[in-house]
Length: 257
Image (cartoon, rainbow, N blue to C red):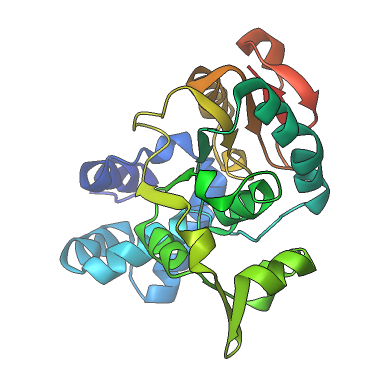
């Protein structure tokens, strides 16, 4: 039997129900081939067999294949727009009990940035952010809340001084911020989405999916928003058919239902 990438995708589906057909093949296959080569396995079949017997290798595979490049306040000018325009609009329209979802949250940089930004408008005890990701290891790192210099370089000085403590070469985020975020494992491709969200943030993730999958997910995000709710995407993304879906564009990275 010829153990090619098609074989690997079918085996991964059996193991995880993760559909690798939804990801850009050239990009995903390149990452996979690099991992298999670095681990010293002779092919897809041997790697699959090893993962079935080695839970640590399996977890490492999931972490490697899910793209986990994150940082606080990534693209600061977009966070300034969120702070200046979007949050005041949401508070005026919906009041202070906002339902907020950080999708594909990686190691927590994004939902914690949301809490800090919201804290300029609301008392912390009124803030609640729901954060999800496919990668359990990322979620565990998020719950620990330790970050390096690179991750927090865009954090405003006031927030850095107030909510971070230096521990060795790392920075630990305050429990006051951590307590406002609820983390949960979720697969955007097959799990249910929360409903009636006032703000959904999913940034720099959908670029790794095929065009067909991206369109499907943009529609699913639209459906999970309450009318008037806002969708915040990444600087490398755009919703080409946003009018057809039903969105109104606030600016290049913010869309409303």
